[in-house]
Amino acid sequence: MERGINLLKSRDSVFRGLLAVVDLVNDPAAVHGHLASFEPDVIDFNIPHATHDQPLARLDSTKPEYGIWLSRVFDAWIGGDHRNVVRFAEDIMALSCGVKVSVETLGLAPSRIAVIESNGTYESTDTLRAAGEGQSKLDLDVFRHSLDDVLHHPNITFRDSGLESLSDECQRRSLVEVCGGGYLPHRFSSSNGYRNPSVYCADLTYLISRVQRHLDAAGWEVGLRRQ
Image (cartoon, rainbow, N blue to C red; front, side, top):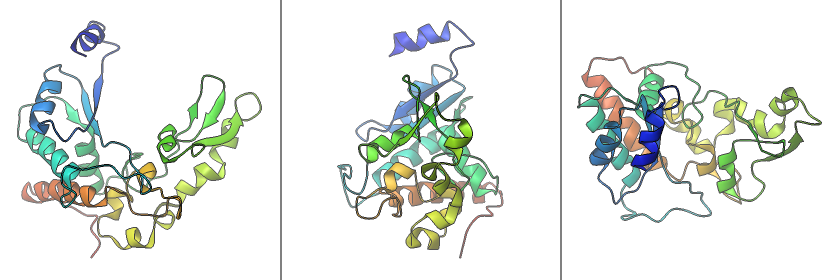
């Protein structure tokens, strides 16, 4: 990995950031510190994909382990002398303070993302493949359809309805404007489609609450909390 990163760093116009998938067995502060040593502009951390049909095994199912892990990354980043941005932390802080950012994994802003495959077919967010075979398919292609056709496809537009597209439980949650119900693939179940809370709901609650406590302590006005 280090050899590949150093090759990218040799071309300043190419190297901008790093993306890591959370592995609970590794120390979060140490992981962030190691990645930060490469001096990227941005570091982001993804939670492994899981659905209600295929939940992820945890070390301790009684704890929000992924939320705790990411909170420790946040603490290491905010408490250290790092030049890099940690994207999930910056996004949570912005959303908590009322900034209407467009983030695919958080918040209620429409996600206008489509993927063009190498054979010319359009797909919705390609991570929906984690929800099951065909979940990302639109049956559209660049040869017969325009981007307007893609933007008006039902599998794209249903995400534009924001709060209304979420489960009743999510709509009642105090942090919904920030978590946005969680990342779309992580809400899926074969019985109820995407109208479920995220399988990482407890983790997101823990993480967002930790970040918002920091904002409160720093004197920032956290404006998106429902009572």
